[in-house]
Length: 314
Image (cartoon, rainbow, N blue to C red; front, side, top):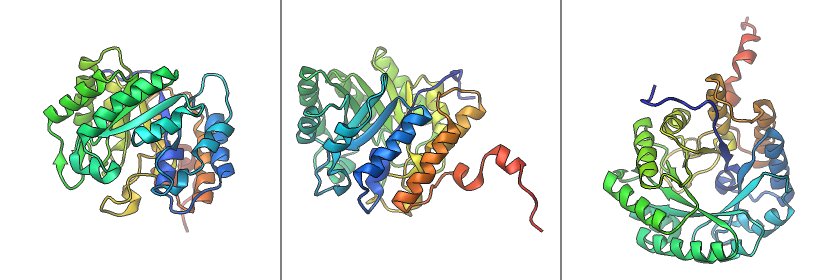
């Protein structure tokens, strides 16, 4: 379908507790976040991004980052990740029991300055320092290569710019990295090409993708990435999230809805280890506590089985 064979299984990472809640205006109670986490674990997730170490003045939603990590259940085989925007945030994260630190490095200059008030070059330099500190503390580091393919208010990212950014990220010594479709306007061929490039540069480094959904291509971009050899797929419950300073209706600014991604993968017999029915309970609870309905087609349109059982309107 995409020039590659699709795998029989895929690893999925839910980022709703970080990138999803980032876009929710009112601050959730810590216990509400932990209840969402319990539901995600019950659904079968073993890798989750659960908080951010952005400054509380910038994102009050994550002022409880240390408490969320301290109170999170610790079932065997589960990896918890936390996003950091800079070295200061990383040093805070290192003092907790988080398993993995995720550092954001946009390829696009304007996005980097608006998101982290720094240039991509400065952020890449900080990444190398973060890796040194994290590894000394026994923690892993993953690099989030943001705006890997397309930047809002700019357009497509040149291939050579992505290539140069990937080389510096890999040279920093990260344990893994992912290519982020930050704008949500990416297309399958870009993910195919990007994963192929990253794998050629670092064949022994796990490489994932982070999906947004402005153009509705999130789930099919997941297939393209998996076909090219991506090691994991990131999405969020209900399609929540995104950088809300981007222009456009907030309903299209978020992550790819994880339930739509799961529904597509399962329909193609690609195993994920996730119980979709249990996951939809998480989506329902998140709608209640965030006050925001799911943007997914599955939540609004129903499953094939549910639609098959419906009756015609009189």
